[in-house]
Amino acid sequence: MKTRTKARCIALQVLYECDLTDHDPGEVLGNHLSEESLAPILEDFIRRIIFGVIPIIPKLDQLIAEHAPEWPLDQVAVIDRNIIRIALWEFAVEECTPLKVAINEAIELAKFYGSDSTPRFVNGVLGSLAERQTEIYQSFHQKPSQNTL
Image (cartoon, rainbow, N blue to C red):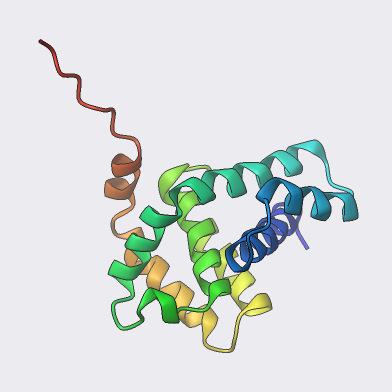
């Protein structure tokens, strides 16, 4: 398994656990990192994903809901939601991963962690979101308007 793929797997496991419990993300991450021997750059990548995704979950979920209207968000599997959140954060919010790479990595995570239908669902939602990549990026990076008196 590629090193960044392994990092995404750990980030996904942490986000999944935090989504299902009230566990502290830092503590959950610490537990996972104590079980793995990773380069500091990969640990940093995992932290960036987790602490980049968590504060914007409501906005990410709103985007997911808009692009999967036949699936109410509360009916989307927790693992599927988190796979899509990670990829969306990577290609549209942080722009730290090329679009096609982020989608391919999400599909690989979906094959490994999801149900038989997860890869197709993840690909469909992310494909739809990809069409709005620039708009999504801008919505997360707008500078607050400056009101002058």
